[in-house]
Amino acid sequence: MSTESGIPDFRSATGLYKNCYHAEEMLSHHFFVGRTREFYEFYREKMIYPEATANSGHLFMAELEKEKDVAIVTQNIDGLHQLAGSSRVYELHGSIHRNYCQKCHKFFNLKKIIESDDIPYCDCGGLIKPDVVLYEEGLDSDTIEKAIEAIENADLLIICGTSLNVYPANSFIHFFKGKTLAIINKDATSQDKKCDIVIHDSLGKVFKQIKGEN
Image 1 (cartoon, rainbow, N blue to C red):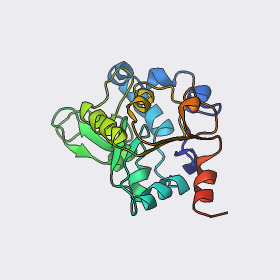
Image 2 (cartoon, rainbow, N blue to C red):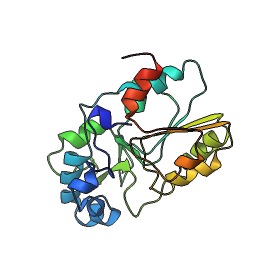
Image 3 (tube, helix red, strand yellow):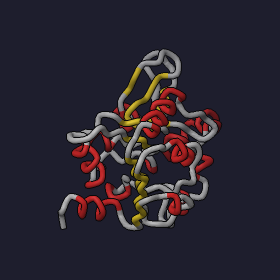
Image 4 (cartoon, one colour):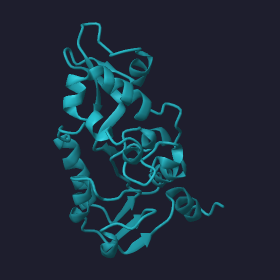
């Protein structure tokens, strides 16, 4: 969803993993613990895009919420759905906008991470960690439960801009019991045959056409 806002994805031909072969290692829990300084150097350079703005896809979902009961389940950590105006967003992998001291649990916003020249520490001396799910870490069970509940109760499920290769998010499609299953993605996925509507194109172009824009 966020590639058209200038934020690279992970697994496409131009994604982070193709251009940085050690990205998965550097975004792991053990790397954060053992090589914290290098983690933050990589994190600030590759994972934070403070100038990014919501695109037509984010805005479409926010506008749809004015007319329909909409829930968004996302693997993105950029917070652009909320910036666009969506209120019911389940962030499976956390958010760059939430950061916590591991010692006293004090909250810090993204500004603290950006403005820290080195490893960010709390006033109490505790290490600050982004509230994002790293490799080797589990997803928040409450977020998963609410996401699955939303999918189970949906009449329409639109899957946007994902390869459907990442577990457990790719398994959530099996909880859908509604009428229409749609997928919009540039490339084909393993679940295309199960969908009622399949569109292989950019999200921005598709949502603009739905809204009647050029």
